[in-house]
Amino acid sequence: MRLVRIASLALACGAAAYSLPPAQAAWGQDDPKAHHDGFCSDEKFGEKFAEIQKTRADRLAQRLKLTDAQKAALKDAQDVRAKAMLDGRTAMCAAKPGEMTFDKRLEFRQSRLQARLDAMKAETPKLLAFYNSLDERQKGQYDEMTRHEGFRHHGGFMGHHGWGEDGPRDRHDD
Image (cartoon, rainbow, N blue to C red; front, side):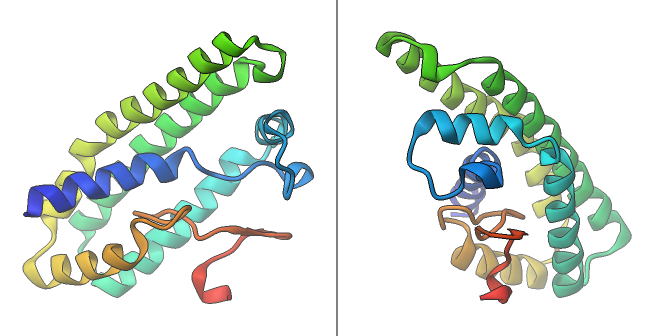
């Protein structure tokens, strides 16, 4: 059962990692080209993601009362996720789906999914190492937290809960 939870957690991470919203200029638009262009033109993407990750790590460390070793394991998982996200974003932004034929757009979608899967595979060992470093009390708390957050559209392990007009929004901001 624990392996199923961890696998679910890893899946949620992979999905959350690549589901960050587009830049503010494209918010609220349903046009895939506008979404892609907005996402790819956001020059502060890396900074925003790093800020979200730090906030989440700080909150998680406080709630679970993480030790220094556990904080280091969490940081390792975050570093792998950040690299995978930025690499995936670079690859996605190199393509121009608005200028593609239908069959090329399908190939583009497949490559995006493959990038997500590759990122999840890269991240899973670090996530498992972090999770396995937790004691039983911490695992129970962590499982409870991810049970409520892990499968929201933009939620998940250290994911975010949406974006407002001024940038990232946490569920506590609602």
